[in-house]
Length: 274
Image 1: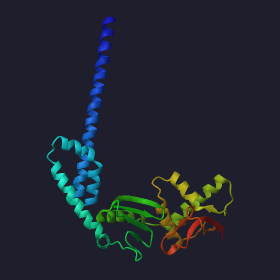
Image 2: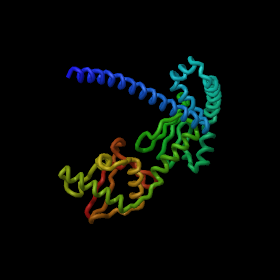
Image 3: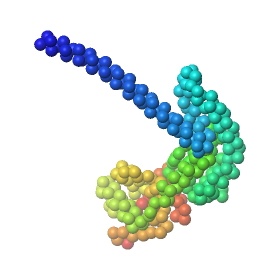
């Protein structure tokens, strides 16, 4: 027993030493992976000519670069020189931002709304809003349902983001009958839970909140566009009842429909008996 206990104590000590070494190696691996991601981003930004993204990355990683400078890393002079060139490029871009943005949008087959004025732009009949902050050199993209992205204001990066969000929202197939059925089922489920009779007026946000809890990947701006399509094209009748949307003056609780369907903020959903 004494011999066994002695071995057990030594194994325990060895285990503690190994645990410390494993943690050290894990920390080193995590740091190496983070460093690899940083230089990968740096390469991507430079290859795309995204000066402001590169500047933001370098400024964010200043402590890391300071350590590299203290160790006389050979890449530091090149990074600093590139940083100064990027500053000059970004100054020119900001001065000529409206022209650069318009050209980039045309190339991407995106059209700025006619009432767009720097630094505030609109697209898709006001559905998308883009605001450029010249002081911070960032661009905030939002739509009727809130913020979508806040990023360094490199023109091509901004247009790429708009393209991606535009495709996500407007590039989806739409089936009116299927969407009406979803709307009807959600409406009935809420009525049942709240012990209300069919035909009762329900806030539209009650339906979006329920979908958000029960449908993976649900996005309210996609729901809004689908509701706008349904309002414009139909169908409107299901289960012997007809969909009716009622307006509200409460801009926080209502939803502003898109395009030709827009007629103010929609606040309530009713399925009236035919």
